[in-house]
Image (cartoon, rainbow, N blue to C red; front, side, top):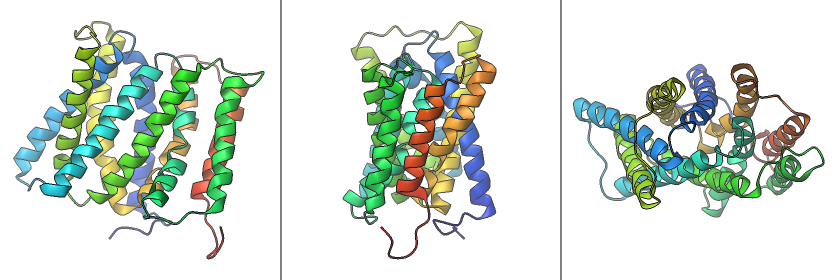
Length: 297
């Protein structure tokens, strides 16, 4: 039986921890993939291969495929979560470190809450505005403070737009979570892959398979663990927990990513990154995640 939004059962907690670890690995693997593959082609190749695996699994299971509104929502999920989010994310990771990217995308829980409020799925709390201002201050600190990380403004805006896209996709994921995960991912990833590959072709990116070992291993990780594994687990998690609760992972991922990046690729953990991450994570926690007493704002 699914757990309550604020109280994950042991299975939900295990799913959550696994999603955090796989998600942290994704940001690093994309950086290695970008060493050789153009961003749209790299993302499209990744999800085209992953979608093929899900199609085979879905057809083998002989489970019913969604129709009508459910089919449209699943395709929209793919457009946002696999098309728009990863197009922006892959491009941004050409210009920023994985740690910076995860700090910005830590705003996803807050954005998910605000999107849910505008769609009348959750009620607005004034503290969300305070948390949002703190999160924006943290992002601004990384870019514009005296100890800034020299993060370009355009990649920061791309990361924020990507965060909005994935926040809306979590809401859609909740709506279609009753459908079999392989079927949902087969449709959603195929939609995203088509969008990414068409965009790649439109901007004239060269299409070639990776030859550098690091890029090959990164692509293998992204297809098998970072796509097939992670997104099945995410749909299972959102089935047991709320969309906004599932997005808690985005607050934890910056910590694990900063540590992994420092360990694996020797990227230093700077004071600006620590301050920015602390402000963003505190703002998101206060604005969207911290438990409140009944009747509190």
